Image 1 (spheres, rainbow, N blue to C red):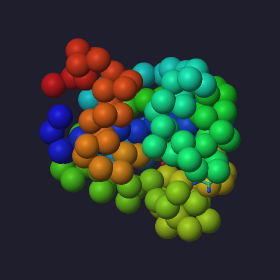
Image 2: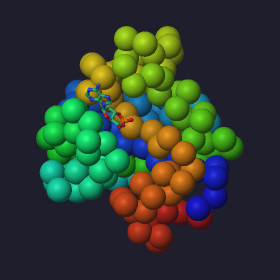
Image 3: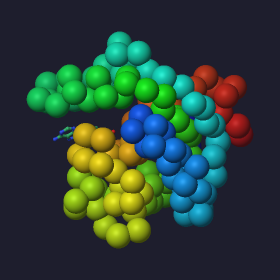
Image 4: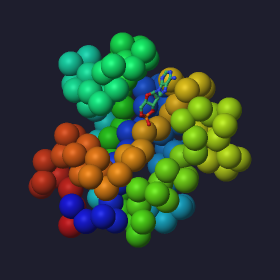
Length: 140
Ligand code: CMP
């Protein structure tokens, strides 16, 4: 996949709170094009697989339980410098450290319930996009 793409999930508490429209609007306003999007739900097994890199972390069990607790929105986004620009738009993992105007500052509840996920590298953006979408679900 081109390096101008990133992957995001709008997490269960943000979907449950009815914030997904506002979050998608912020993403589009920031210049990202949506190349794939779906409302879906992760089983605990799939959530565990997605976050496997955090398996040894103390919060892994809580993270898997939370990410499988309700529907999420998964999406592939495109923009020049997508990974870095999207991480800037979402803000720090801990919302108390997130800058004003970021998605997490506005919608996240805590470090665990932090409203959105954003890929941390081009390589992971591709792996995470392929985890959720088949090639024909991502528009060219
Ligand atoms: P995300 O960007 O999806 O990537 C890993 C996730 O782990 C992160 O967002 C948080 O939801 C979660 N996370 C990271 N650190 C902590 C922590 N200290 N306590 C609980 N959850 C965490």
